[in-house]
Amino acid sequence: MMIQRIREYGFTDEAVLKAMAAVPRHEFVPKSDNLLAYDDTPIPIGHGQTISQPYIVAEMTHQLNLCPTSRVLEIGTGSGYQAAILSIFTPHVYTIEAIDSLAKEAKERLDRLGYNSVHVRNGDGYNGWLDEAPFDGIIVTCAAGQIPPPLIEQLAPGGRLIIPVGDQCCTQWLVLVIKESDGTITTKKLMAVRFVPLVHHDVE
Picture 1 (cartoon, rainbow, N blue to C red):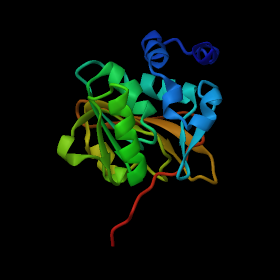
Picture 2 (cartoon, rainbow, N blue to C red):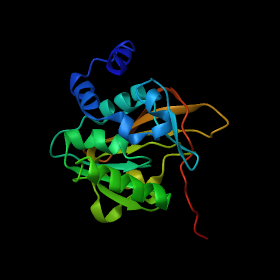
Picture 3 (tube, rainbow, N blue to C red):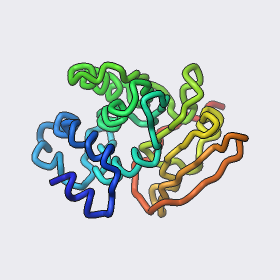
């Protein structure tokens, strides 16, 4: 039913649909919400965070255009669901979660379910993961007021960054950023969305 609902949006990327059918979404939501796990809606996972709506997960994954050699960075691990989806496409998945307890729980969950190739780190995702850069794909699952410059810098030539941009009280847009082979940056607004805000700790 979840896959059929995603198809109703006109979504046709069969590789992404196959990956989503393979990952047990109910394992990534609180047990109290198991009956809602496959509904096309975001679900709270604690600490003011959510697991994204399935259609949005599918669309953001599709926009990355991943292959088995792709190196991909996720900002906002949450429960680990998006990272599990990404790991179906490539073993080179790096994910950062600002909330320590969520990062630990996600790592334990991913390992338990066999997604052992995912690298989980607790930290400020705004700054990316410089030691593992550059990345062919970067996916941000929380909204930023602007596209973080460190993420653009860590994007490889030919790489793609998908990110919700906008304040929580205003319209947010899902934005696709492409870094051309010569370093030129192009951006495209895809759709209006609503995400929890990116946690960023400014350093004076």
